[in-house]
Length: 321
Ligand code: DGY
Image (tube, rainbow, N blue to C red; front, top):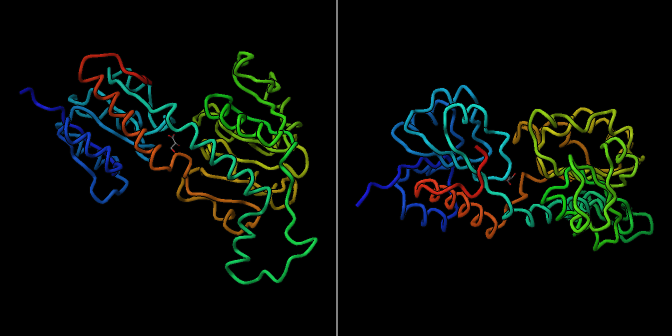
């Protein structure tokens, strides 16, 4: 029998995925699911053939430089891969994969949850019920913003942006979008394309951020762009926290320029800007976009499909390097 490939898995996996991986690989697991430092990751990578990492593992050029020569492949348990320095991997001849498609619906569902939660003041309402400050039904109590029939701008019309649009159409929302390239009409489905994001922003009663993170989109939603949005607009971010300039968003939420925001992702999460915690008009979730049992199993299986392909000498299914 040929030796099984040796795999370092940096975080705990769903049970069904652990079962499958353990049957085919010699695995080193992270039993208590802590976030590994770069030093620990490098130490534990010794003697391994591949890594299975997550968005919390920063695969920087410095780390790649120090990886043992035995590492030939890195699979990330995520669709986003701005935590991985792809040029550094390519320079070292290390292959890498991600997990697109399987988390599209779960993430789009969370975007709609945040959109409605922010618009209808779900956090404030839930807190009032729990804390007993709700006195009675009233014609003017805790009024929110009507979503049905409004305009939704989508920044980044990839798979997840398109799935958000599909859901928003059920609310009779008019979809505007900015994407690096215009979609084919069958994918666009009547959505209004803008050649620049700046052109789109005045049409955004709601804005859903669905573009990849990384240096190109760092702090994309800044004070100048917020100023271009209609007064009382609502911002939803399920992509990456780095796309939002927190200082600008917090100022706009405090001044009332924006009615509310719904955020699932944060720069430097889980250490979000503490000012968010003080605001009642922001609906916060702890990066739950893909957090359903079905989706996390599917992501794990997709990561394994890519590792299996690599070790069988086949082309990767979802190559990023
Ligand atoms: C991803 O896969 O990039 C997501 O952010 C994880 O939910």
